[in-house]
Image (tube, rainbow, N blue to C red):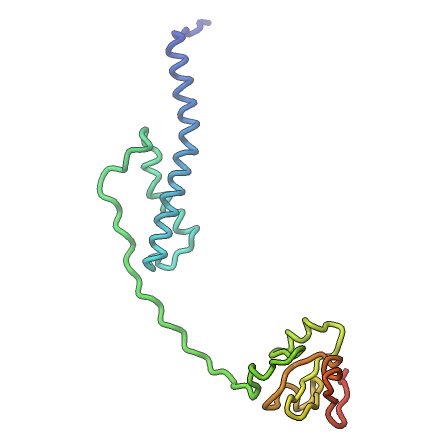
Length: 178
């Protein structure tokens, strides 16, 4: 059995070359990611992504740059002209507005302390109390489930305790529905 002897200089050169390759591979991958990221931003800004997701775009971009990263000189640009930008896509038409129901309540009506324009806001303020609709003109309040709850021309959602403190009273014959 014979051993192959290699001059020390050649062994050192091979070791340095292998080390340089291992270091440059992540740098090349990082460079490709930066280039693809920049291309993606440009394509999004110009609305030329053609409906691709970032993952699809990245896969295509890496494929385009694979020949560049396989070359021995990573800093050298690819030979030949740059690939043309993706064709421009006409912007999608604006969605048709959906008709909305006009509320009888004006949000500006809730201006007093403890008055809220939405039931959710009032529930957030008093989670352990009953939320009522106070008619700010008549100073009567209504419970959820009754026909006047949230429907009078002037009013606001309030905690029942705050309504009572403010001098408001329950509408005649109304009780909390369970």
